[in-house]
Length: 241
Image (cartoon, rainbow, N blue to C red):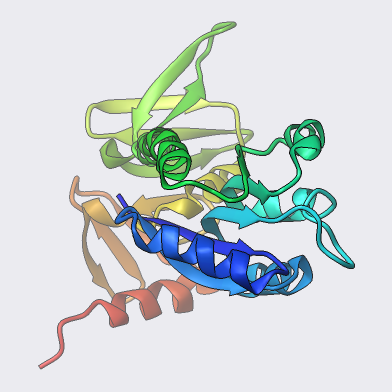
């Protein structure tokens, strides 16, 4: 499993040495290097998330500790690489995931990467699990019901609650359809087709004009507000001759 990373250090030789170590570890992919934290933050804000940030601490203008609050939003792991042992309390106060002393040895570096790799696998597993099911509140206090995303056929708004229709039946929970729609945004198979219905494309049988027909025999009108986005998606995924 490959982890992406960047290096931040205002000493060119330190960047070169760490880059050489990274090149010797097959599980790491070095995306870029930076001479100061400001440029690194600008890069992250433009390109998004990386798995590991290796950062020096003592740098001009913006040091690694002061930049931690921002950088930690763009990475899974923040690892400080410094020649100064006395910064350790501040580093871990900034919730650093590692503290490597220069000159960094191959052994200490690979041990740290192995440790982060194990944690990274746990993160990926958790993210994968979160994309497979959700829990809704049941009718009784402290009652929770597990529903697999793959089992949801469609979701129907019913006054101040929703009814989730699945392959095995249905469940009711007191939440608005908009809140449910927001929750389902991470999944690319759910579409709201009118003010009252969200369907799963896994169970969409066909579309006839403004009518969406679900595999269980149900049919629903596609509302004007939602029609263009829904039909554009279907056109992009339509086999062309």
